[in-house]
Length: 606
Image 1 (cartoon, helix red, strand yellow):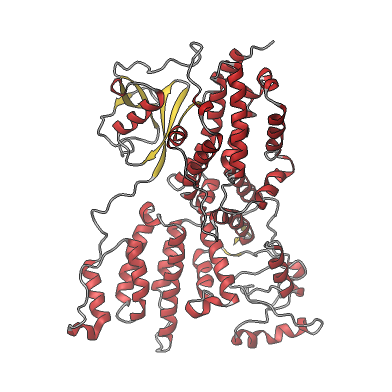
Image 2 (image 1 turned 135 degrees about the vertical axis):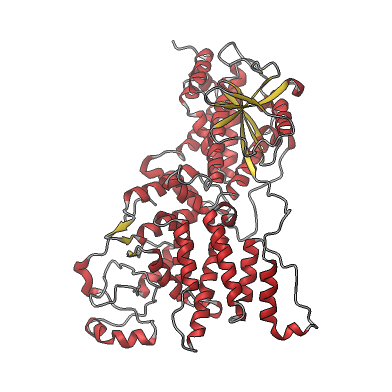
């Protein structure tokens, strides 16, 4: 994925590119002169015109006299090669002018609507549009995109009567692009201030245009859904106003365009970290509206402690602690991003002693659980988090974590869950002080990893294997020697899939053969996008390097492919309530020094 490199157009090869054959009549007339010299020495091959992007073919380049290279040329053989191999290696995007208005002008100019959407050109355009919407944050901000869209919608390009249809078409194309954008980023209006202002301004402009262009009413309804608006007054079928339905509809909407009030807030799934000791915490899978009392009840059940003797503190890094009231919402605006949650007794003493203070004993509940049920609960949890990850979050995460605050919440939660699963495996093994039970735990985790692979959950699969391969666990040679040979052989086979040699070839081959739906190992996808981003320039001579953006979009679309299942099946399965509760509330040690101390207590260095 990350090995393909973006290449700038080579001016030395400009005399070898054959012009497109399937283009508009006007373009044919303009290009007849320049194309004759190129077509005399070779047979004419049907090609498709791809809007405003140039494709650099391996055996040809652009015509020197071609106008800024805004058309494209792809041979039929290259298209057949792409279809047969199901890849886009046979072509590369060339750069286009970097100004967002210029990019959008050509993109909107080649969009196809309604009956034109089934044409090959339209499919190519939709593919380019998808690339653009997934990767535009690489070279422009959301504010720039909103401004450019609004500018294209409001621009006036002529006063002649027959140009009215062109004006309507341009406006509908802007609204179509917005519809595609909102379908890819459903929470955009709520989370981005620039988008909110843009949508409200665009809404007013569409209302103003409704009298002149009544056919915009359908697009207006889509925009209403996006803005979560509600019409309070409708036109009576028997009223005289029906004669001028467009005008009355416009006035009605103008009077009543406002967001629906009193709607119930969406309860998003979150992973809440509650510190228990200086070296451990409980990870609670809950919802964004959870109260302090509800969270304390969950933690008390997980730790087998009395809820009445527990309080929840809001601890800041300078050392200040604030007591949270039982009826308070945990994720309220009063809880800052730089703060953490800490549970302690009412006398403000630690509810548990650190694991390094004594030989900490606790019952090994894992040994009584069915390994398949544990794998199912892990997969259900991961699938729920993975389903909430938006494709563009991978791009935001790669560009800059600080600049993308708030845009990568779901992705960060899935990555957090992967880390917690790894730490949970290490914690369970290192807190088991009995050798025979520790051997049984090894066998359990090896079987759970195998079940996760069978359930196509490579996120938890990697986490479990990495937990067993961690330095604090892998040094337990006495324990590993007691593990039966067939389990050691199985572990070796599973471990081979995590081999990083040849750019994780073993994992990539196995992942490619798996049917969807499936959960990929997200850190590797982020690594691929990072290599593409860091290894290729975003701008080449002031032009946007769309070859780079296409490679990023192809990698990001793996998320979409993993969640697509034409049979309608889901990865989620029915699981045990007891196991689900245990998996949703993991008690883990995240201090590496503590883990090593526990490891050396179990098997001292000789």
